[in-house]
Each structure stands twice: as structure tokens, then as C-alpha cells.
Length: 146
Ligand SMILES: [Zn+2]
Image (cartoon, rainbow, N blue to C red; front, side, top):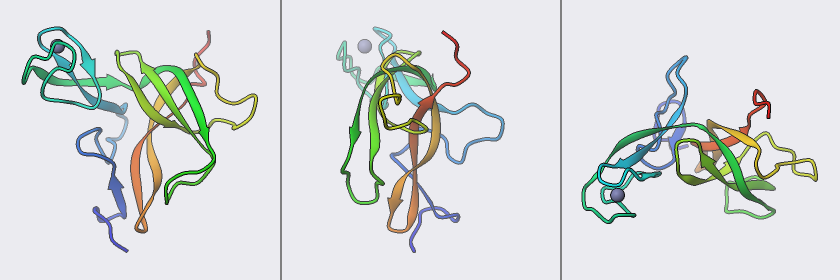
């Protein structure tokens, strides 16, 4: 079994989030904000994709709260994914709409609903060569009352 960390975890991407999570610290995604036009993006880039200013993006942490914009239930997936699973777009309260898988949602008529409040979780997204690949997902925010 190969792994990139002593405890058998791999981390998706580079610098998208902190892993392992710090105890008693809310997880954030590491995005970027444009110093010229204030556009906020995730994942981070060096150049602003909106005003096209080179090397203007600075680090900007995105809180893991948002609203479900759209989703699709995948009945098939790449190797290592357990199906069915839910792929979604979540509009973060801090700006960008990002791709994410969902967790803790029922895959039925009473399942995910567009507009529901979501929160970020860092967790296994699939297995890769016997290691657990850690990434981000969103789950319904049970603490939210409309
Ligand atoms: Zn910009």
C-alpha cells in the first residue's frame, strides 16, 4: 500500500485546504481575491480571470458555508468512487460557486433540494491505490432554519 502521509491519507490538489484539520478550527477553502477588481475565486490562480490583471490574486480563505445551486446524481463514476453519488454546485457565502460532491444526503425524492443551506466537510472522497483520498464535500446544514 502506498500513501503520501504516514497515516494512509492523500490530499486532493495542492493547497486547497489544510489537512489534517486543526482541532477546534473551522475548515476553510484557500481561494484568492483580486487586488484590482475584488473578484473572489476558488481554486486559487495567479492572474485574475475577470479583469485579466496579471499576478494580482492574493490569498483569501473561504468559509465553508453556502447554498446548493444545482446537482446531479451519478450512477456511474471513475474507479474508486462508490456509486451512486451526488455532484453539485454550491454558491459559497464568500462569493464563488464551486463544484463539490455532497454527503449525508438521501438519494431520493426527499433528497437534496436546490436552495438548501450547505456546510463544508473535509473527508474521504474516494480510494486511490489503497489510500484514502481526502477532499472537500458539502452536507446539508441541519442547524439552519429558514
Ligand atoms: Zn480582477
